[in-house]
Image (cartoon, rainbow, N blue to C red; front, top):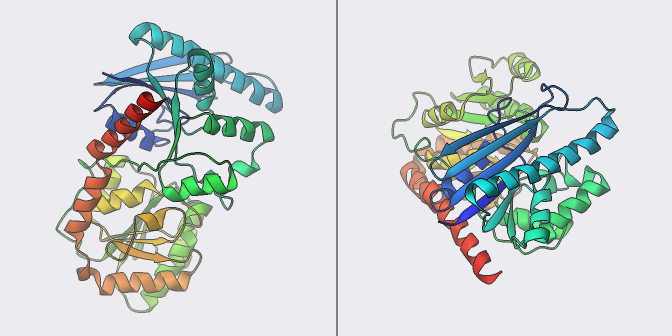
Amino acid sequence: MMHVLWLASWYPGRRDAFTGDFIERQALAVSRYAKVTLLVILKDDQLAVGKVETEKNISGNLTVYRVYYGKSRWPVFIESILSVKKYFSLQKKLFHQIESEVGRPLLVLVQVAMKAGLLALWLKKKYQLPYVVTEHWTGYYPISRPSVYQYSFIYRWFNKRVLKNAALFLPVTNDLGETVNKNFLPVQFQPLPNVVNTDLFFYNATPPPVFRFIHPSVMNYQKNPEGIVAACLQLKNMGYQFELLMAGNNSSELEKIVADAGLLDSVVFVKPAIAYEAVAAEMRQSSALLLFSRFENLPCVILEALCCGLPVISSRVGGIAEIIDSTNGILVATENVSELVKAMQQLIDQYTLYNREAIAEKACRQFSFDMVGSQYFSVYQNVLQHG
């Protein structure tokens, strides 16, 4: 069986079970077709100075090494340099350990170019191991905050080297690939989608008693939750009966905005971040997904909602228009609250025109573990065959 080494910049860890969880799902999908060894190096400021801890977990054909290292006592500027040096040395050390335990991989996949791609560059130079790069990051869009263009020259230089030396660049949307080529670096690319656990996100034919929008997000500037609340207030004042569940990072500021609008716990319900399984359960009990982001690539929640058969309202940003059309949702201009209100009104009024079961069937075919895993495996085979 083909052995692929995955190098992840993010991954669920003991301090944050949600960061990089989409990478975990992709790794599980690909492990259906190849032996995957995933290595992620994570800084843990709660560890003692100089302390390193390694966790190894095996699940079928997927082996995950999580390596945690503590910070040093040096000032911030020196600490950042030493941290990168420590990161790279731990990457090399674990690679040699993996090589001794299961053999040298045939191919390397980099999940998010920086900083995981540093080892991929070294492996290509030392052992001629080819690598591909998968990217999800909105930071390649100039409007994004933060964006790659705000990082230091050294960071951007290494990021470009990682992309330039890859056998293939695999953005999750065509729009992201074109954006990278236009604004950052010309590079050959092939879009490959994110994956959805369709054992959790699936069609539920029973609608909720009250029309229910759901908005799972981190509730930050990018996601524009205050714009969503403003739209909800206008729609309520028009006499519409509906609910909105906002599930994500705790935000007393957001709760105050909702409370000041007179919507808290009557129209808009705010919950803290919930587990992946709980998000799926809430989606299955909802009518539609509601997003109003200022910038995006393609959020996983859109794919998950579609697999549940939920029509999607979203701002027309990033690669979202590659997935959402008149059959499965409505796109609006970002920051245009009145347009968002009209879309919410239209979706409620014309909800029965959407074939929710067909939406779910199509999405599950596109984004299931089997489909996405097989697409990645085909890329690996082509890279190894053609160099």
